[in-house]
Image (cartoon, rainbow, N blue to C red; front, side, top):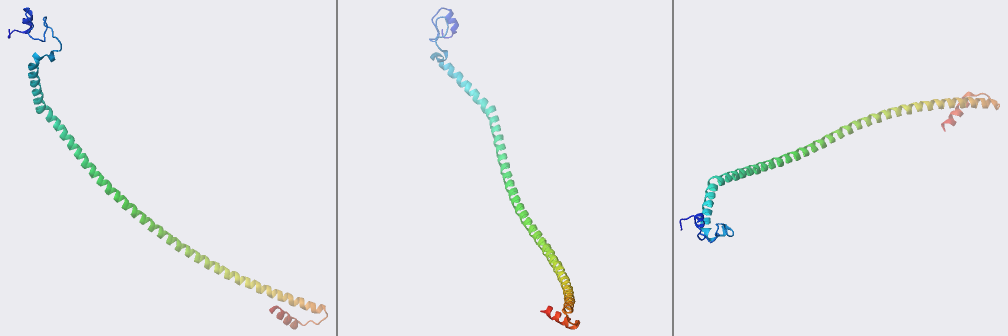
Length: 189
């Protein structure tokens, strides 16, 4: 009966071939947990695991390894590129700072030159204005002196004429020389 199949043993009306089968050939409980079938299940489990191992070692793992190596290469290249860009950014920042400092220095120099030129022009304009004012002041002083001298002559003339008329009105003789000398002495101080 060892070579009989399970179905034949049940069909002949004999007792069940396995303790996991009932009289009618149906499984009692879970077939995976039946101790009679364990060696067979372990054998096929080992065959399946060995097949999976060979498949993964020959096909799957090399592909995964290639993808991981490619990823690592990409990451390494990206990190190197980022480091290079960082160095370029630092160099660009230093160049920017140097250019900014140079621009500030140039701007300060230009401002100082412009201030000096404006001050020079202002000094020249002030000197010209001062000389014009001095010339006009001297001319005004001269004209005022002329007007004053003319006014003094006119006052002296009026004073002389008035004095002569007063002398005549008071009954005196008309002496032009004496009146002129008296008025001139009085006007001088």
